[in-house]
Amino acid sequence: MVSSIQREKAELFLKFHQTKDILILLNSWDTGSSKLIEACGYKAIATTSMGIAASLGYPDCQVMQLSEMIEVITKIVNAVHVPVTADIEAGYGNDLDEIIESVKKIIATGIVGINIEDSIDLNPVLIDEIEFCERISAIRALSDSMGFHLVINARTDSFFTSMGSSQEKLSESIKRGNKYREAGADCIFVQPVWDKKTISTLVKEINAPINILSNPTIGAGTPLSVSELEDLGVARLSLGSGLMKATLALIKKIADELSGKGTYDLLLDTLTPIPDAAMAYKMATGINN
Image (cartoon, rainbow, N blue to C red):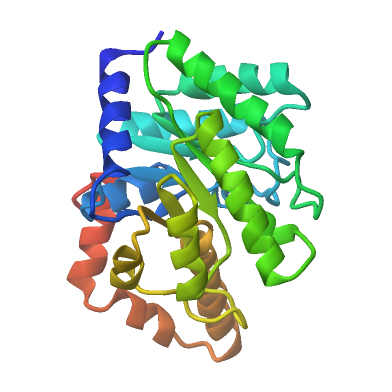
């Protein structure tokens, strides 16, 4: 059963995609990171599959068990007041029936949206577009039968995994994006794209709100700023695994400095000013000391 609160949050989350203001999502991986993001003023929480997997000691790409992911998501939903959308990768199933059963369990956590992608293990050959549209349509039908509007963010990995020229990848992304929209998706997620011209074309040619990933990668260039993306008409901005990767990188740098030089400079720089660090701890845990 879907509660009235879950239904209302889903409606609110859908509206966030339909305004002139861009929806910014810092992707979280546990209760603490989610509570901190909420306390910083963000109006929705999105999970990162890579982040949750890493926090449990797994690599990404559906290696962790669905039950483990559901346990984490349930805790996040129960810990925050804002809408929560979950990254469910390719759907956690080998066929349509299995995927629908997985989505039923995920909806039962109290989430109001999902991110589902058209690649499996980032394979260069994407899921057949007709098959993927059938998945979207079935998830939409499931959501309708439960009496609420699950916000479906359909991700195409045409740019990320496919072979071919940039123009061919762009054309494929546009074609798939429009088909996914027709099948029942609310938002189309294309990643990784970095330049203004490509993003502008996606916004103009795909008849749906567009989600762009800003996850800085060495050698890939610098992502556009929030204001630049908003000016281009992008509806939704995600950090993906970036926040978790930055956290892990910071731990590694602090550990290397301590074991190498025996100093705490980076740790102290991160904790300065101390009141900010204390406040972050309080926001993430609710504990005052």
